[in-house]
Length: 329
Ligand code: PBG
Image (cartoon, rainbow, N blue to C red; front, side, top):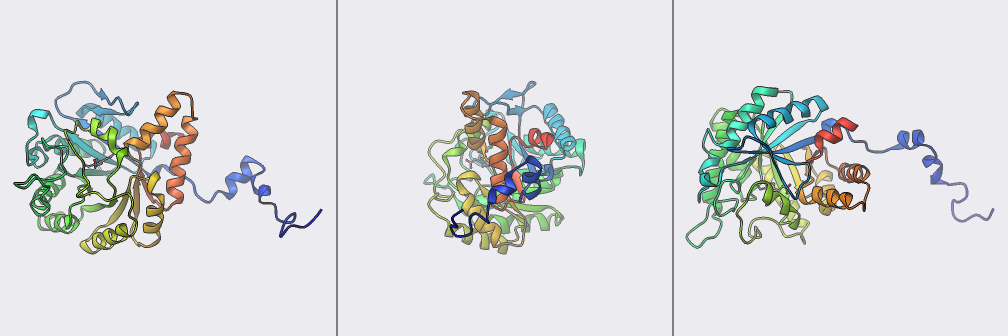
């Protein structure tokens, strides 16, 4: 046979011949301990409420959240990220429910901690958007702009009440400058030196958050472009990374995942802390919707997307499929 470069000596297909061979040479594999389950808990409901844009995901009652946490433990999932959904009547301009020790998120943290103890890493979203009547991630100034430094004071209070409730790690997702440092201080000053911070380091202003806004009943009008990052930017994420690490981030996160795998790979290459990626609501909705139409093989697409995120460098992946996928692995 004619020689073309290394062919026919070199035949990469040899290592793809059987399932056992492919399994042996796989460079990355998913493990249940890679996965973190984001979960919503809604105040004042007695039955779980389905989220229409996220088929299979619900707003939990306090009871069904406890059950979901137990199922996650049984499946070997690493952690749970909790989001509180207060009653509309409990939303206000400064997000008071987010710092109320009896607010829905704090209650849910205590519930889950009582149910599963330390068997799951219990994490909480540290952000005001679920609790503000205007839907922004911070408090507004007189001109209606999100006031960075006034918001930091609210985040410090949130950190304390969430830690008091028993969370293992907080996840500040509001993209305010200085949030990691202020939260670290607040935790340390209130005896919570052991509570860690999973910093949303690179969080882009994304159209793929759409279904999440339904999930938390967000009343946001407009957008978050003055605080979340422009999808056009990569170098900016490296700056955010340096700042977060300097301020004391224990773990860093990239969000969304699939459209930002280059950002994830770059960050994963340049840090010595664990790196998480958040496969967000819109990523979930796209696969579920295409599968429902019969246009895509759902289970294969889910595993392929998660494997791609791991290959790009994520140690941990937040995914609404965490328990289901962990069971199947
Ligand atoms: C803000 C927050 C958001 C998500 C997680 N934390 C929404 C936003 O920034 O608009 C989105 C998660 C998802 O879409 O699955 N608290």
